[in-house]
Amino acid sequence: MKHLTKHRLSAAIIGVLLFISPSVQANTTHHHTLTSSELKLADDSIIDSINQLGELTVNIPNTQYFQTNNGVSVAFTPLHELPIVDISLYFNAGSAYDHQVGKSGTANMVATMLTQGTDSLSEDEFVAAKERLGIDFTSTANKDNLTLSLRSLSDQSLLNQAADLMVDAVTQPAFDDKTLQRNKNQLITSLKQKKQNPYHVASVAYHQAVYENHPYAHATTGDEDSIAKIDRDELLNFWHTFINANNATLVITGDMTAEQAKSLANHLTAKLPTGKSYKNTLDLTKPVKARHIHIPHNSSQTQIIIGHPTSKVRTDKAGRQEFSDFSLGNEILAGGDFNARLMKTIREQKGYTYGIYGGMERLRAGGNYVVEFSTDGDKAADAILETLHIINESLNEGITQEELELVRLGNKNGFANIFSSNASIHRVIGALFVADYPKDHLNHTLNRLDNATINSVNTALNLRIKPDEFIIITVGKTKPNLDK
Image (cartoon, rainbow, N blue to C red; front, side, top):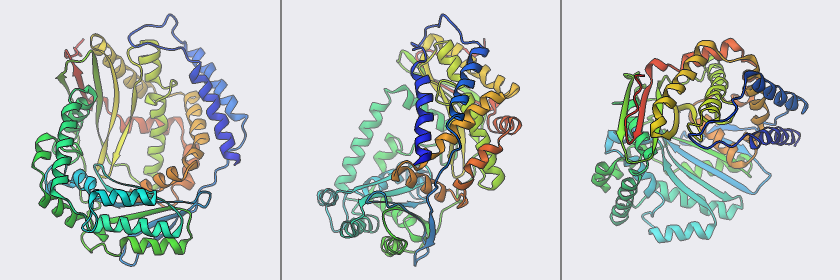
């Protein structure tokens, strides 16, 4: 528990500093701008306080890896503090695979309907079974994966019944026509309502622009036209194509032995048919033309998204070090706390926005670097130009040693938080396993943080962020003039 105590103390120190920061209203100006010496003094105070906590120790759970009898890869992490078991069954069957067998939104609709009844259970009976067992059972889709997730008490009788329900859902879905039509009506209504939200409009436009003709370009939900045309045959075709043992990965976390986990894994996957693996079959994303796209919208605020495609993050040793270095540098530039450069200037000093954040969306075939914020329409041009100036200045001049030490210590002391709950451990192990990270990746996290230097971090920032390639999306009443 030593590492958790230290983490709470360090979080408390940083939290206090955040709470005593002056409150800022959007589009107002401070009477006092923080000087570099004041910022350095604050940074040094944080570092000194964290250093007093002593050496950090982290106990990383022991994940075990094996295959089921029909070849499904499994990651099992035993945790016995709570009588809970988490299960996630992943398929390479996200929305990027929609057009191979159907229309935009097919993967999302399949995921939705896997927990809405089976050949042997009506939707009401399926819901009643979940409630009777006291389980959390969901099915979701993102751009890369379709995932079924189950959380149950580890009591053997309850867990066996929960596993039976999961097997029934994945191998005998009903895809009832009436339920499908209801889902389509509800989703179309929801998308119409979301058109009133400038962030939603900007996000859809951004992904279409940044990925162009790539399968990542369309929204996971699909659009109103594609959803209206989805039929049961397409759902069945998608399910038959992608839901198979060769295309699956299983993650189990919680209160059971290795032998119990192997038995459970075999039970969950035994009825999956053989088929084709679609892992790494998507084309890699490509650079696109930089441009400014404005979408008129009757909103007082202008939503702004700035970004560009990025190459796939490598999972070899050098690639993982490079991304760790980039993450440290990006936290200094565009992280979510008040020490980030963009936050200090765009929010704290200029008062353009309540919050501005930047980071990488990492997908199997590539990704994108993106900065997002909103501001009053008449301030949008100045806010965008100032944001671009800060990014360019940071890339050209680099970060400082003091900034690097601050985020390095923050990340080292915050590393233990990954292991603060069963759900967090399960989520992290699952993400790494599905993305083919080495099994000892977490064991070397602190080493990668220690290995970061000013040169390596600045190099990684310049490798990943290309201002000349930025696509700028603005959604608001008037188009900001960026030619000033």
